Length: 212
Image (cartoon, rainbow, N blue to C red):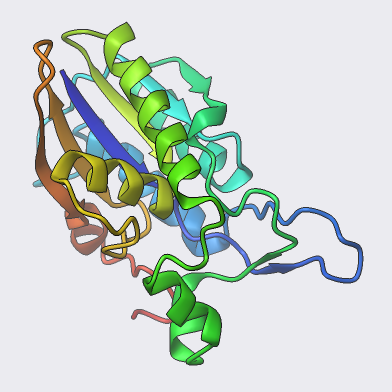
């Protein structure tokens, strides 16, 4: 079977420090465009793009940015959208959400924490939760093709497990990027692709900012 691990589209910036409420941002205007393009691409409707993907189900993290990315994909593909709590990001309880490119551009100390995995509390537990969740979906959908709409840390955690890499945040998944894993019923796992972004390039839709 095949897994399509999709990072959510670009969300808004949220700082709930004054209230202490959990930051669970919705997609930005650009993020909504990215999600729509992704849906058309997977449905085979983009001119000059690949044929439609035969998707059996769409699973999504319960976080708003993932749900809003998954909704047009599931609708366009005619698949059920299932919320899976085990696909939530490591920062699910934080009160501030700042897109990583903003942190990088500002040389914010939190960016350096991210690239060294120090931003993830209970790293081993987080990765174990991700792996158990994804492997359970693999077992439940033998021979099928699934889309898992989640987060950069979740994708990194599972790909690091498959590749035998010690670092979880070993690459930066682009917004609405697709990373594919082939999962054999005999237990073998292989990474078929990482960080596919052809749909955004074909549509002329940027990853973030003003055309950057």
